[in-house]
Length: 469
Ligand code: NDP
Image (cartoon, rainbow, N blue to C red):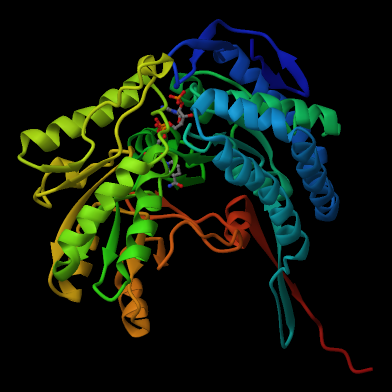
């Protein structure tokens, strides 16, 4: 039974809810569900810890971040097991991406914060400089697709900037957050600096609305982001939103078919397509369109399957497969549910799917599906490819596949997206800005941009009297 973590202690309060194993669909565990009293207790604990934590020198807080990274290393296998139990991810991905990124997040932000210069301007007769103050108590709301990676991505900069936090992970993935609570306790982190509460979206809603919460950082769907925005509007709380995507990929005929297909397969099927950065719309130069579709369809059939997170999400993805069929699409690969003949048949799997033949205006091509699926359409000119890629309400990420250096820069700079990859996908330097435009988010996190969000500058100006010596 997973308990909340409040004021440095496990708290077994509130009713409980089941957590399912997506590989089999069976109930794999239970967690306590935060009610208004639990949420209030967590926020109060965070407020109580805020004074000492915020006045600690940043170098000391950076030291705590390094200790948490060491704690994650020490509990690496437990975190891997918890993450796999909740999500059905592969051991390979969890060991090489999800949990190592948690370590990297704490180490990176320890360095970035400790080395960050402040602004100072010395003009004749005055000195203006800034100090940055933490926001206070930050609500951290994260989704289920990369639970540990995304939680630590927000926690590390929020904490090192001097905030205390209350985290609400997704109802589907409380496991790695529960292990992290133990890591905080084992490291001796001051009580109340990190508080973790479990529950459904309603617990998240209570948290963001709580008057003791000073700011909200949220990664999740655009719909929930919009709800949160309305909830915090009256108190004008700062928000940082990393939201959904309908990401485009463009393949030019000079890209090298094998490289483009391999990279596209990764960008479409990784994590069962359940990454906000995954590609769902491909545009391929007409001369290689048929070859590309055929090769991608082959790759789709070779993918190691990962379940969708829940029965509900699987139904959603399958409803888009059905929609594509009803609109006359050609299913180049997949399109239904795989049969294993074992315990996985009651799990939440769908087939990796490649679709062609739909209009740009179809719901399939406009709405985020968040599964292992993409639509592929041909284009004739560079200008057309850019227009097609930009023809979305979302603007999180895009990929460009070409051998042309000039073209790579030209196209990348015209794409309406927060992130553009050329001849690769998902490579990240944690110091660079991360986030989306249009319906894909508000603000940027990453490097000093995260610290900008998690703290507010105060400008101090001192008049300097001129004296003759
Ligand atoms: P949701 O928006 O459904 O949920 C995200 C989190 O918000 C969960 O913890 C959820 O709890 C909680 N929540 C739900 N309703 C509320 C509410 N009214 N107030 C406060 N919190 C609430 O997203 P998913 O979990 O389904 O995640 C998938 C989405 O996340 C996709 O759209 C994807 O694109 C996006 N995403 C964006 C990323 C980015 O960096 N831009 C990265 C990764 C994912 P519960 O789960 O318990 O309902």
